[in-house]
Image 1 (tube, one colour):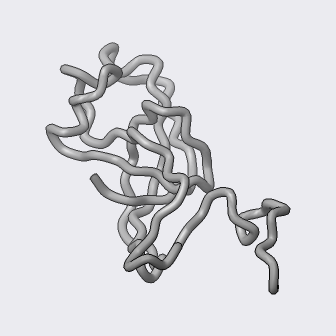
Image 2 (tube, one colour):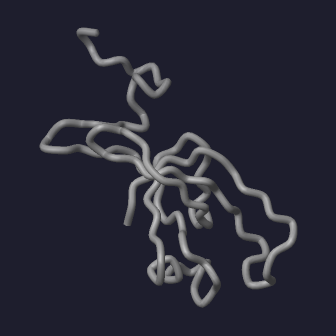
Length: 109
């Protein structure tokens, strides 16, 4: 699995019948320590992710292991929306934290 941020949507009105109804999102790989961004991938959304959210995605043959993508021509699938992550006990990202638009500012700030 890889960590990425959803940065946009991809619309395709004409596509193979095996992928009709799929929602495509443009995601950008993210380094979990530095938050620096890397390459881009178009992925099938299996969990209802939205622009701006951090997600986990699988690629290659692993992308065809979800219920939605099984035996379909898919090379990347979003299979989780990330709530938070820690590195060495340090919270690096919290979807519901103050710096992400919520009102629960930690005391002492």
